[in-house]
Length: 122
Image (cartoon, rainbow, N blue to C red; front, side, top):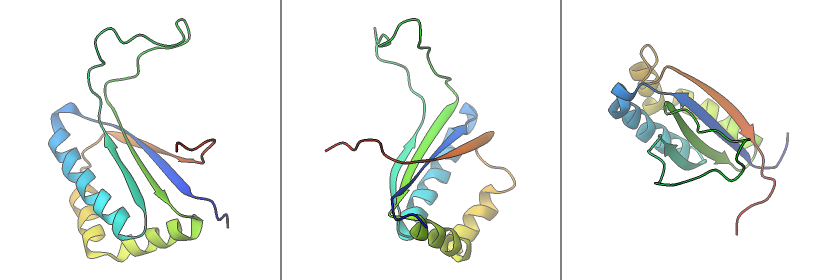
């Protein structure tokens, strides 16, 4: 297994009418990830762009959708990530979260991508 950090980006397609439920879901998963060895970088929902905010590469860029939220979290390595997956499945709060949101999640769909840094900010 790789010893490099495991960063996961989860992109959710959200229902704007269920933002408060999505926020509740987010708070629970931030706690669970941090409880089991990860660093959660937060959940982010769409907002209005700043006035007169242009794009850096006209002709190549377009505005993103207004129904996509993003979560980012990191584990020190693959072993830590896999241990988290096992532990959260047995954690009473993880079980409760899956029961609460499993049949009727506060999002329409999601996709996840595992990332590695090219460069890190100082």
